[in-house]
View 1 (cartoon, rainbow, N blue to C red):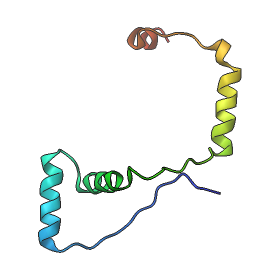
View 2 (view 1 turned 135 degrees about the vertical axis):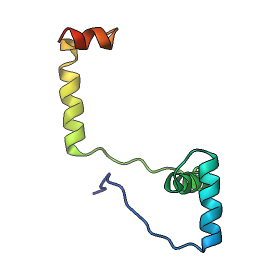
View 3 (view 1 turned 90 degrees about the vertical axis):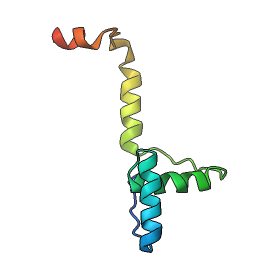
View 4 (view 1 turned 60 degrees about the vertical axis):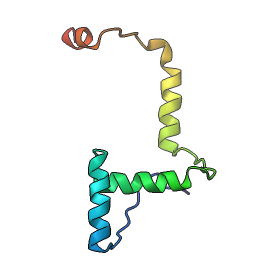
Length: 85
C-alpha cells in the first residue's frame, strides 16, 4: 500500500556547485531545497505521473462530507462570519 508521506534525500555537492545553486535559488526567492525540488519536478514532468489511491481515512472523510453537504452554509464574507461566531 502506498504511503502519502514525504521522503527525504541527502546529497553532497562540491562547494562551487552548492554556491551556484544557492545563488540561483536566491535569484528566484526560493530556498535551496525548493529550488532543487523544482529542478527535479521539471525533469520528470513529461513522464506519466502515477495516481495513487486515497487512504481509507481520506475516503471516509470525503464520504462523510458528501453525506452532510445539505447541511453546509454559504459564507460570502469570512471576517463577518468569524465575528458572528
